[in-house]
Image 1 (cartoon, rainbow, N blue to C red):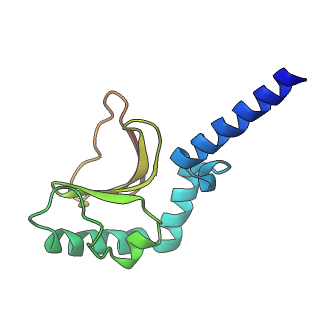
Image 2 (tube, helix red, strand yellow; image 1 turned 90 degrees about the vertical axis):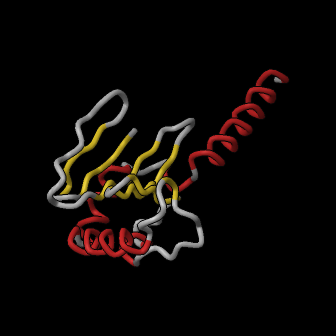
Length: 135
């Protein structure tokens, strides 16, 4: 009986730790399907328009954008953890796992080709210039 109580306590602690890192909203959802549906609802054109506006306003910033930057409405609808600027690309991170594992939406100008998958990086086209991103 004592071993069962210890095992149960460890399971509860492990679930609490996982919830802190992953968050309860992702425990039961398919992130790719969720993001595809969100992009369909928001509209890829709105995301790309807001990407261009944000690019102009953050021309001197690279990497993870500061929290005080006001994100465009279409970005906020994706409920991002944070946004990363990489040259002309913007990565809207909606889920982050252990280490550097990230899931989100990658926005590129339409004239830029789809990034090639390398190592642990995978992108899947949702619309021109809009990609599901997992690393």
